[in-house]
Each structure stands twice: as C-alpha cells, then as structure tokens.
Length: 240
Image (tube, rainbow, N blue to C red; front, side, top):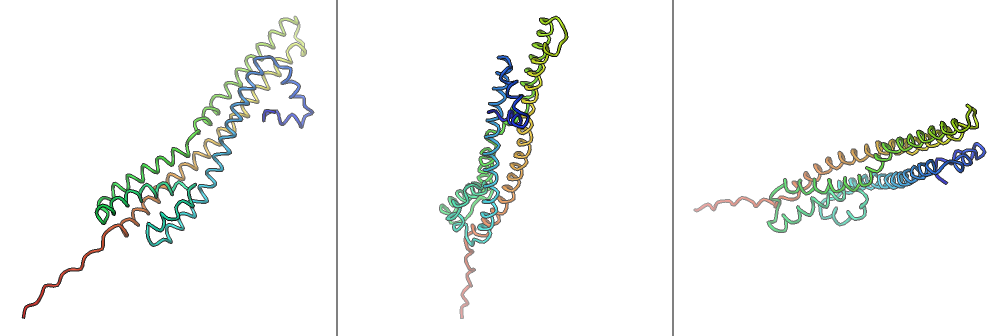
C-alpha cells in the first residue's frame, strides 16, 4: 500500500475506497508519486545509516590517530574505521607521504601531500552526496505532479457538473475528491524529501569541515615525522 494511504486505516478506509474509484489519470498521478516517495525514503534511510556510521567511526579514528606514535601505526589499523571519510583523506595523504619518504628518505613537498588529501576529501564528499539530487527533484517536482492531478480532478468535476445539468454534490464530489487526494499525496511526498535534503546536506557540510581540520592535523603529523633526522655537526679536529 502506498505510504500516503496509511492514514486511511484510521478513518475507516474511506480514502482507500476513493482511490479505487478514481480515474485513470488520477491513478497514474498517485502511482508516480508513490514511486517518487519509495525511492526518496530508500535514499533517506540509506543516507542516515551511512552518516550515523561515519560519525561514530570518525570519532574513533581521530582518537586512534592522536594516540599513535607513527603514521605507519595509523595506516595499519585504518581499515577498521572504513565508514569514516577521514580514513580516505588519511590514506590519500599517507600514500603521497610514503612515496616521498621511500624515494628520498624524507618529505620533499608538503603541498603535494595536501593536494592528495584534498583530492581524497573531494572523492569522499562525492560519495556522501550521491543520489542527493533525487531528493531535491522529489521536493521540487512532486507538488506540481499533485497539482496536475488537482487540475485534472477539477476539470472532471466541472464535466460531471455539466453532464448532470445541476449543481449537486453527487455530480462534483468524485472530481473534487480526486483533486484533494492528489494534492495531499504530492505534499506528503515532497515534504520529507525537502526536510531530509536540508538535514543531510548540513551533515555533509559538517563532514567537509571536519575533513579540512583533519587534513591540517595530518600535515602537522607529517612535519613531525616526515623529515629525516639531522646529522650531528662535525667537530673540527684540534691539532696539537
């Protein structure tokens, strides 16, 4: 049963009966709105689960990162915190750091490490924002789809009024019912999508800011560990 018909259980099923008596156009509108709603709720639930796991694992990863003495120790356990976008940022920077250290024994260019982390952060944000445009489309389109059903129901109501030859409730009620049902269905499909789009978008922006902060913290760790140890100064031999 489409989600917007659930309230009918509390009013004796009259709405279900009305939907069953609607015309082809109204049924097509309701089915399209139901499809929009089902896909939107699937995206909303998956995104909330993804964000919840990412938030928990990010906190754990940052604590492990700050406790570690070496970047290699963090790399060894990073896979445990994979849902966190900070892991991808760390691995992007660590891979560039490892290349520089293996080739020259030290860090030659911090800017290249920073660029590698920026690329990784962009990829992580893209992963979080995947399918988000569908919520925006649902919030923008479904009210107009419902409005189309409303206009069609009013047209049908006036047609019934003209056929009956008198302004009776029996003549106009079916068309008005179709109009009201499609209007309500459009709003019920759009409102959760708009709310979720804004809330999830705020969480994604929060992760973006958190990733920028972690990248700076990572650069500090690279500066502490990436430079080769300085050779002791040679003491000139004193001739006697």
